[in-house]
Length: 335
Ligand code: ACO
Image 1 (tube, rainbow, N blue to C red):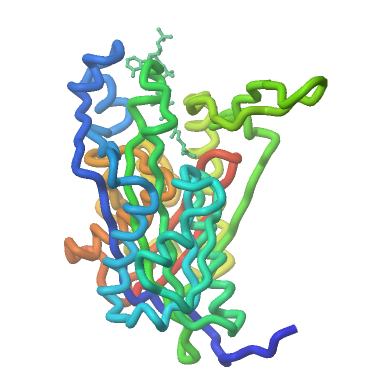
Image 2 (tube, rainbow, N blue to C red):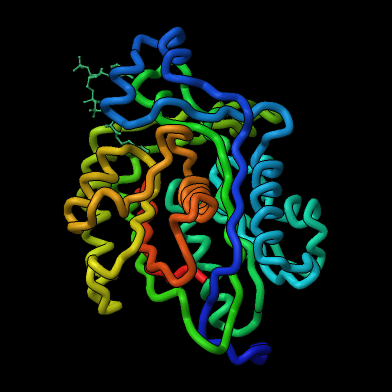
């Protein structure tokens, strides 16, 4: 076992970045494709428009731009980065997209890998990277959440296509031996309920040669039981957040910002109500971007920092939830 390189006790948050593609798909435009309306989508979800990737906006491109942004905010030399974790369910290369981001950044001293946990992906990646930093072998990490679900949405299914968009966000985090701004976390999965939301392998059988079959690679579009996912989110997210607050001895009054995975405004409001967190503390940008899967949480944090909402030493309660089923929560202090 390798000796610890650093005697670190905690994690500090140094910078944020984000990127969304230019193409905007409004509710009005979707209404020309499937039988829906701006009024229906807006009232049921809070979403008005979403961004759609085109050539030059794949997960590697988006993740790179978000990461570069975060690194510039942190004022880091790329050669000092030890770790890059990319949370994505839609890599540009199934073997992993994080090393391509590493190469584009020129962060040649870093190790880079992908992590898949759908809409919980960013949170799981942030927790993973933080554990590496607290473990004492790495000093600086960039955690990216990027997804391009537009490539896997069934654009004829009005029950799901209205929800998703493309985008990326990233945070630059650093180990420190003075304090710990990563206050606590919780993570859960329940594969028994996994069938509520899938992006499944196609199982297209083909033959290599006599009597030897193989399954041709490829994925079916997203399949979702919206009502079950909704019920899961409004039940489990408040439970995991309340548990985390209790374990860390924080009351919900001490939370400055609630940053939830941006799935549906009604889910955000319901979770806030159950935690008795007032609406003005619940950050939301899903009106403009819809659900960008692993991208939502860092995209929201970056926007709130740029808008002077999240400030140094603010307490952020965050939760990601989605396919798997998977969900998690983290309590952090910005800075
Ligand atoms: N436009 C118009 N009508 C619609 C649309 C639409 N886009 N979609 C569904 N309907 C109709 C249905 O056909 C149904 O009609 P019926 O009563 O005649 O059968 C009616 O509207 C109600 O449908 P519900 O499914 O009950 O609508 P609901 O209020 O549950 O809203 C929604 C649907 C928005 C999908 C909601 O269930 C939801 O947000 N669920 C959570 C989904 C989610 O967040 N998924 C992502 C998780 S994150 C991840 O890991 C990727």
